[in-house]
Image 1 (cartoon, rainbow, N blue to C red):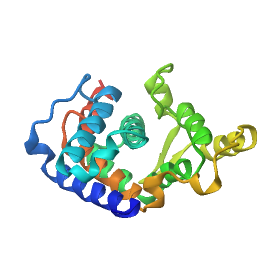
Image 2: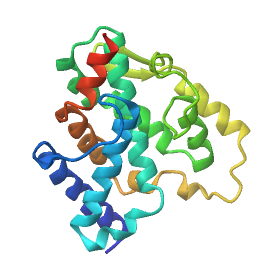
Image 3: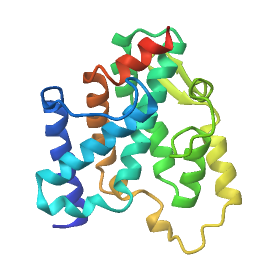
Amino acid sequence: MTRKNSFQTFESSLGKISEDWKEMAVDLQGVDGSREAHESMAEQALELVVKSDEDLDRFKTGGVEHGMKVISRFLFYVALAAAQQGKQYEELSHIIAHPSAFGQLAMIAERQNKIASRVEMRFGLSRCRYFNDSQAARDYELNGSMLEVKNLRDEINYHSMHVSVQGEHQIDAKCPAHRAEALRPIYLHLADIALVDPRLSQSTMIKALQ
């Protein structure tokens, strides 16, 4: 199976899991609506995908789990930002599905790992926890259904100029899933889970307003 085909198989399996998620009674770690709960969703989804097809076993290691957690954190901050900016839960699916939302992630995914990791850290998308979630969410600006992460492009440009990427070939700049044209479908499947599971996006917005 080629790398592109394996990612397409992965994406297809994740799509089926997202459709069945509500009936699967998946256990999640962390408080409902929290960043940790979203991260746990990504972990559990990956585990279910890998179990679904032995050819996908290699996705247990490497950058796939990292990428899925980045997406899950992004979904958490979008939901938190939506609540902060007066959006209704019913509007959230349109915000997440709008091309501008995935476009923010794509800008990061197109960069070398050393650059991407620093940008992820700046906007709350890395595994590091050193800032306030409510404060971090204020960088996620909404205009109708359009999303823009404030200063994202400037941050990317800054690290592109100042971070040494020796040893990382330009062909590897895009994340593997993005090169295989599977990143956006994976993002949308994880978004479907976050929206359908009341412990995730819905709880994030409810608790933000309390």
